[in-house]
Amino acid sequence: MRAIRSRKMLLLCFLTGFLLTYKRHFAPETVLPLTYVTLKPTRPGTVIELLDESRQLAISSQRMRARNSFQQWLHEKQFNNSNAAGIAFTDDDASAGFGSRMMRIVSAFVTALHLNKTLTFPARGQWTYSTCDSRNNDCYFLPISYNFNSSPDSSSHKTRNRGSVVSQLLANRTYDLWTKASLNSFYKHYNVGADWIKSFDFELPPHLGGCWVIGQLLYYLLQPNKSVERVLNAEKHRIGWGRHAVAAFHVRHGDRSQRGHQGSKLQLASFIAQLSVLDSTVKDVLLMTEDGHVVNEAKQIYTGFNFHVTEIQPRLNDDINRLLAEGVLDPEKEMHNALVNLYLAIDCDYFIGHLSSTWGRLVLLLSYGKYGCIPPRDLMGSTWKSRWGFSSCTASDFSREASLNTCKIKKNANK
Image 1 (tube, helix red, strand yellow):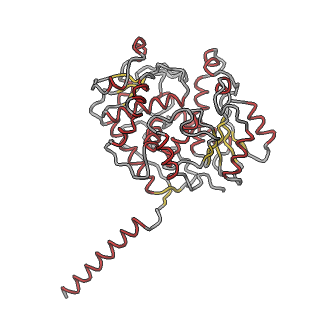
Image 2 (tube, one colour):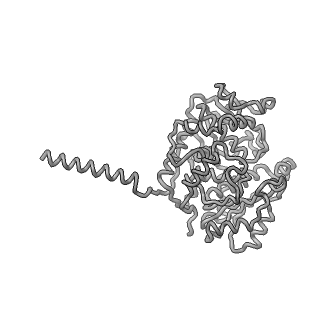
Image 3 (spheres, helix red, strand yellow):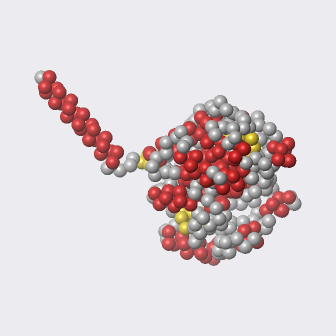
């Protein structure tokens, strides 16, 4: 009897091992509905999720676990780090565009994680696009750490607003500010932190890399607060969002066109043509542009398409910073309009735009951070090198990760 039992146990062990090996190497990856991720209640509004519940998007459980684990890791670093006095990002270039601002912030974040310090913002900022008391990111997003409002007032550091560089931070200073000038050392002497990411105490899956990490940092930083969520939900309801597959067009004219930047002369017809190559069945388009003439052209000429256009702020196709200074545009509405477009764009099934603007990079990376895959795209003849990368997401990283992690499931299924 003992011999029979032993043979049965050996057979059971063999079958268990075989099934585990098969599942790991041969079985198709399990897909599950994307669900809410609730972190510890130390971060106000702790639901780390932007997905519309009405869309039952299925992504791989592996991608979802990687994202959730990294977000929890960031949360622990930011809220449970004993070295709370760390690196504070300050607004020495307060009128910078949103994409450029976020590129600087994530670069500061990479440095803070490398030094095992907490990233925070000064108690009072000078951001042109904010109107709340702090004039900082908490006007629109969830706080990123306990000491969100405990670091010094950046206005008292105007005389040294160009002096804080990465080399000073690496000299083990207890507290320092991250300014625009910090990027010089970060890029030239520290390989944009690409090597630091490899040494993080978080094990990256082999198919992911620096671009995925930057996507995760953006996903952590850009969780909307309740006021932004209300604006976003109202705009979704107004345009009837999420009923069909959608392509995001970024037709950047405005200041880019005035400065003669590459890609700023592209016309709507080129975007329509590229969409027909990507997927000729898609007729819903999120049209992101500051050019009112483009909106009129879309609705009058391309009547076979359903264009989603936000209406939070008028499109004047002029120098935005000057219009804000003159009081023609409202900074809060300008930011709400940009954020609604951003959150809608990362949920789109396709992206078409030129990378002479940081905005397109921001859309692709935030979408990557949220879904674990990069949407199918046409970059209109540009590459990740066309202007710069995006912090520690290098051109080589993007090329490799985009080839391995392009989304294959439509986020907005026809209903």
